[in-house]
Picture 1 (cartoon, rainbow, N blue to C red):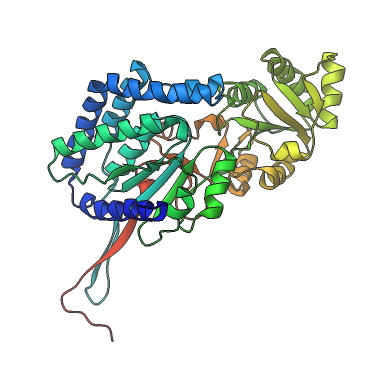
Picture 2 (picture 1 turned 30 degrees about the vertical axis):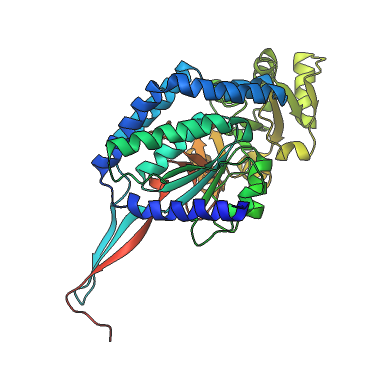
Length: 428
């Protein structure tokens, strides 16, 4: 069987499984998820043995220590996967909700109800625990899923998926065994083939770095939900509570700088620049953050702090577009809320941006005019997360405007259809 035939069979099986999944009740899906969680715990030794093969391959392939750490599965991480499945089991079923209901003058009753999307392809890097997370969320929302992890995690991904499938079949005799599938080959050509099968595949969700997401988007013929990068901003307004601004800035930049909702640029109104910049600069330098700053910022810091510090350098135009995922922060002095909004809408990635101010008019202008998936007033950008939003679980974050936007939980893995219930009505 060649690669095209292999991917076509995978997709056909998934489409058939999606039809069967749609027939499962909430109780049946939850019973399967709970059985899967127990099976992962009971199969910990086999999972760790498969993961050891991946760790050996990763070491030989020259993966960094950070990447090897993301790849590694131990008892704690396996227990975390099981806990995640149990958490998904207790979440409300997103399928079958009545989203809208109306009766037309002729008596025709219309209902708009949530339905599964169908077949979802998820492409991700390194962390094999994503296999369990993504499969469980798709399963709970009634979607068949085809998983493509990195080649360095293939053995781990295969055994995690098979463990879940076997447990599901034991828990419910009509469990569709192709509801969860892992692309069994590391061949890169499998992806464009799979994503060309529009008659079987309904949606693709890439999770990873910008290069991966762009490569997937460029080759896909099916819809792709994505965010390329997180270039997030904190704007300190002229009427900000400066202590609050310090705390929000530090949280947004240094709590976890390697994530997509961490701040990459700090904008400061010129009215408070001389007072705020030396304080926040000192705190950021203490955390070993490199500042890439405009002329006005460097002038204030150099005069007020008397710093001859290699961690202060001139910002470039390209820096403003850059997602660092590191201890690096752009800083710019702007003239008012209008200038801050214009900067964000030009340089930002439509991910998450925040204003710190006591001026409600400025806040409302910022909230209305910043064109991002999540916009905050007096809060850190680090809250853009499914768990923090109360979704219980998250499959990704979208900066698209059509379909899901922002953190994606179970509800975002559904579509809808209209039901028309009549009594013989015909259109005239």
